[in-house]
Amino acid sequence: MRRVASATMALAAAAALTACAPPAAAPQRAAAPQKDYLVFYAAGRHAQAVTAVERAGGTTVGEDARLGYLLARGAGGGFAEGVGADQAIVGVSADRRIGYATAGRGTHQAARPATFPDASSFTKSAAEPLAGRQWDMRMIGADRANAKAPGTKKVLVGVIDTGVDGKHPDIAPNFNRELSRNFVTDRPKDEYGETLDGPCEAEGCKDPADVDDDGHGTHVASTIASPINGIGIAGVAPGVQIVNLRAGQDSGFFFLKPSLDALAYAADIGVDVVNMSYYVDPWLFNCTSNPADTRKQQLEQQAVITGMQRALDYARKKGVTLISALGNGGTDLGHPKVDDQSPGYPKGDEKKREIDNSCVNVPAESAGVISVSAVGPSGRKAIYSDYGVEQTDLAAPGGDILDGQGARADRGILAAAPEHVLRASGRIDAKGNPRGADVVKDCKDGRCSYYQYLEGTSMASPHATGVAAILISRFGKPGRGGLHLDPATTERLLYKTATQKACPTPRRHVYTIYNKTETHECEGDKADNGFYGHGIVDAWKAATTEP
Image (cartoon, rainbow, N blue to C red; front, side):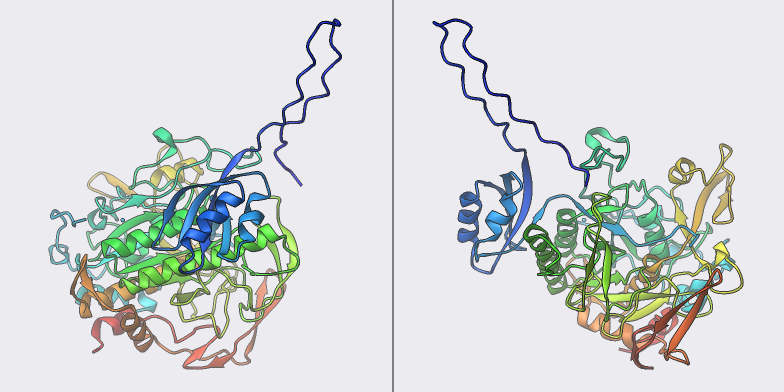
């Protein structure tokens, strides 16, 4: 295993050069490097937790009473185990990036600014220039819902992701720059000196709150709320506001603490619904006491489960509807058997371990979260989409390039892409022309914007988030941040308006992948099953239903 070498001890001191020379000083052991940890304590055990940190040789440098954790600084590899041995402690995690966004690239957080135009000021066009490419919007009736119920600027949608390109022409009109926040600092290299985020683009390695150097978050935001403005595409809810709550690195990895910070901030400013198209890692499946894991690893997974649940509970109690991508492993989450991808950070630390249903994917399997599977253009569950009768709440278009004869990029989901990301990745040439079928260019009045086909449950969940935004716009009551609709009510209406879809016949559905086959078994009935949950989200029904 690769490890950063620690300083070696000095050799024993040599004998004195002369008889009168003083004895050589004893060699000094190099101080162990200090690291920051999130230390989660049981209810009412704050004081005991502080004592536990001190007893383990650490110091408390911060805390978040809302979520019940201390930010502690400790030295040496034994600090986590030491503090975790106290009965007051329920989880310990190093404060570092621990997640990855769940998408494939077209191949297999004060007052609201008063300058936002109202949705009624946009042309009620049923066909934005690229609308013909949006099979996903036609599938859920969003093309018709756009004119009837586009959503209102009183609804705030938080995108917890890699950032949002707030200057993109097809996002800027609905982007709330004042409330947007970036909770991460880029890191050029990982713990082993390997390239992580690459060179920093901004001073202090902290990007502005309207920047996305990955493209994932911008695509998500565009699917939710690209406006009707005669440019490119329209989102599911083209009249609502987007708030960037960046918790992901440029590389796609996430810190635990920024994820917690983003959720707490969303709750405190009155965000109505958040989209979480990522999983919290390094553990794809978090197990509290897997015998294959060290005690330190068990404490880290306990911290992920406990910390995220507390943040999710805090947000939901303050009126935030929580929507997550289910995952792209093609796994029955109700019957997982092996996890060979964890810990996924730093790369190279992965190991194979047996798991069961007590191990959970976070936040998709966290309580209070609406988790969304993906379907392709034909309406079948996408081959990559995770599933499970206990885990799948809803389904939505996520794209599937293999849903039909051969592989085609336009079976993915088309949404906005940052131009500088496409240039850096070689997807457009020096003249700004696309280099593949996965990228689309649209120009108006001499200004061009770019769009990209992606596939993944990351692309499915923002469709559900957009539908939730329509429902909140219609049925929400005046409240903190604009409108308020209890998350339980939003969830009920999402299920009520979804189009139920039964398991395939036979239930053991066989997918063909380049002359190979893979079988996924669907459990449950038409009203609620492992492939489609309560059904495929429906924007038109959301725009026309009665509460």
